[in-house]
Length: 168
Image (cartoon, rainbow, N blue to C red; front, side, top):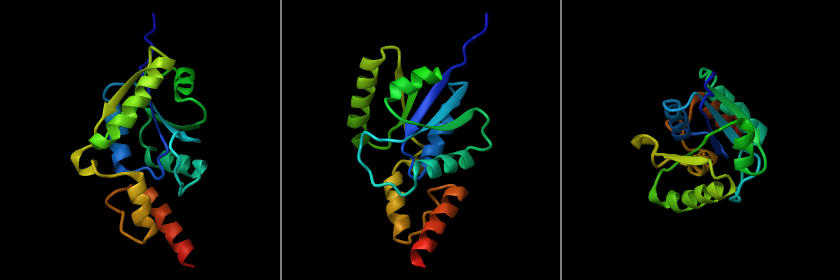
């Protein structure tokens, strides 16, 4: 009898992926065999994006290139449908602050109503990343601020490339 691997899905817009996202993803590997980082093609929250879905996916793959247990994909539609098709048993969500909890809790409850066997696990990032959000990184980067302490090298290079192309 073969044991089914434990698969988790970590969904988000990841625009851009931050060190906080990376921290949550890597720590998730402590309790699953495989993690699917899923870049949402559409979001339940309307956001102005900095990078296209394909660019975000490319950045994710670069950031997690050394992690054979992490797969990066994009998805559209309901998360629970995607998770079910991927064979996932868990949805991973990061919580930075109490303000994140209400929205995330509502989403977890709805996902549970849609698919009763789907669990959502909440992880808090390490303290040094607890204030980070992709929207803050986007804002600081778009105004020429130094975000090198908040993102990995591939993301920083892409952000700098955007800043340089806007300055020209």
